Image 1 (cartoon, rainbow, N blue to C red):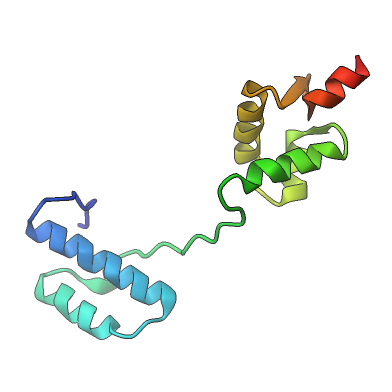
Image 2 (tube, rainbow, N blue to C red; image 1 turned 90 degrees about the horizontal axis):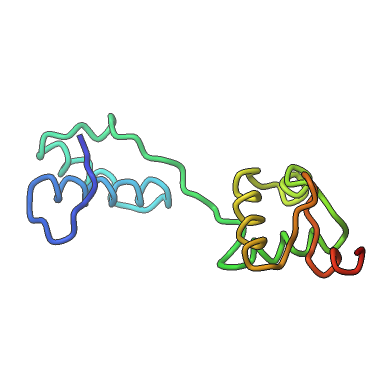
Length: 125
């Protein structure tokens, strides 16, 4: 069983975790040395083939860019959260979280299920 690596802990489990992370990086990025890491894991009593390696995440948006994309989507006009999620090809929950954050900052407002920019809301009223 591989557990989270605890910084500063010097144990056999910490070494196993470090080898697991190294193996995951080698597999994901197609680097050399997989047979060496697998051999070390086998020596330590861990079956490398039984370890699950999650797929590498590819972030579509960098820091702050997602909020900007949501605001740009709302500049075209009022939309619901699912409409914005489809337009940005993103997770509905992430869009809702972003909208609530922007609402807390006074950038957007909600009118029922429809979201609109706060500046547009002032112009309408």
